[in-house]
Length: 80
Image 1 (cartoon, rainbow, N blue to C red):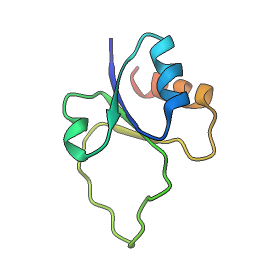
Image 2: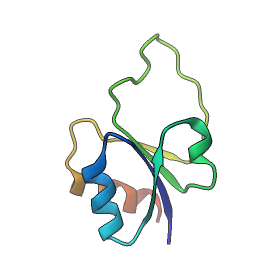
Image 3: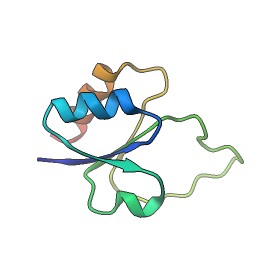
Image 4: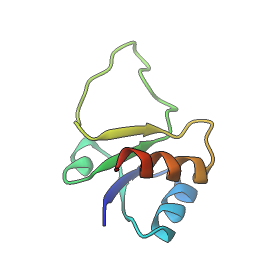
């Protein structure tokens, strides 16, 4: 099954993804994305200083304003 890195503050999304059978790890720093198929971020600190550094080639899903079910659907679409 796919391995998903989820930002620490998104526990409801982590739980929903685990219930769907995904392996979920807590995303605390950029090393945590190694070996993951997808990352889910809260978007709260996105591009704070007007800079964006790419540290992963995997799909990154911004969960800001989305329900846990909507994020799960986005993960499923990106991993097809």
